[in-house]
Image 1: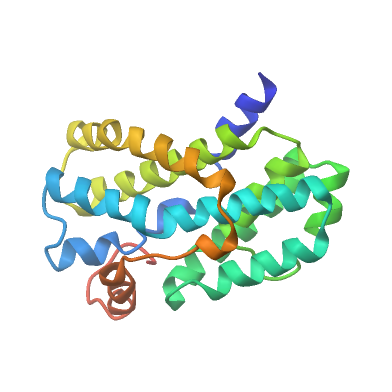
Image 2 (image 1 turned 45 degrees about the vertical axis):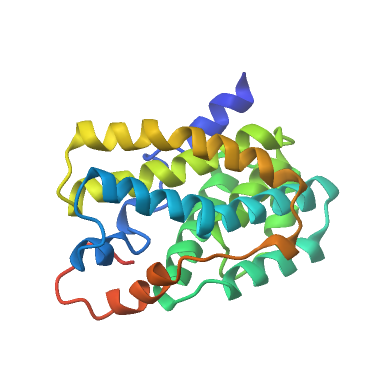
Length: 224
């Protein structure tokens, strides 16, 4: 039970990682009209989950979890370097690195143990968010499956929260979007444990290009 409660705390919107400041390209998608109602938001998010960065993040989290279980400092640092290098734009790199650094620092302070302290010392600079979450979960020897499912759902919920602030949808529509896509999160998470780093990849080019355009977007409330 304590593992479930710990995971809920870590992935809560109230956990101080600054997730509220980022839209992962959604603000630009709203600005250009790609996302304009409940149906288009559902389609856009489904692609991000299954063909975009959420899938990659789950792979990184799973491998960070394994590296933590093995106490492998080198594998962990190499994994983190790869995760940061694969961020397709400055804004998306900032999004993952700022949240990752914040997550690791606050978790070490509040939920720390010897393994997390030792492995965390290997990550002295920028930290990719999924690597930080996988590391912390592995250091606490938490089961992988619920960590992946919980991380995926938190990813989805954060983007729906962003949509409520910048897209023409209300809370009821946002709740329906989460309900519609939760089975996709569960199915995606179930595929990840057997995937290698060679399985990394995405096909959300419009989001990636949009993250560049968001840097110079005239009016914006998010950092990505």
